[in-house]
Length: 97
Image (cartoon, rainbow, N blue to C red; front, side):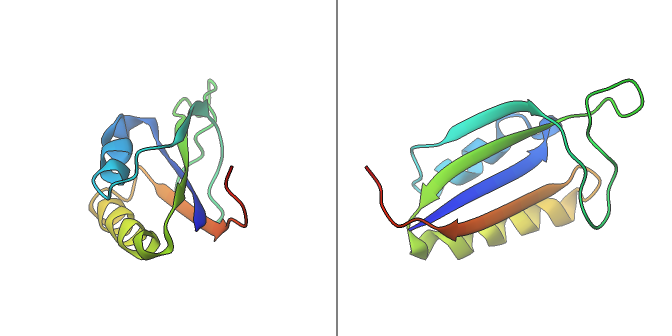
């Protein structure tokens, strides 16, 4: 199993949740109104006067077989609207209670 964290522009609304759910993922934790700046490109999303946009985040635990399909779907969505920005990170989960 893998933990998958997805940071995305708040303009996506529920689209990212719906994308993850379309792969059978039921459980997730959503973080609304987070701020940050990408390491490579894109504008900061700092939710302040100078940079008023902000991000949301989603954390879910995914079966190994679903990681690549979800990441591929996120990549395709990001390529359609690169100015909004989506970043996803996956790491191993050893135990689930």
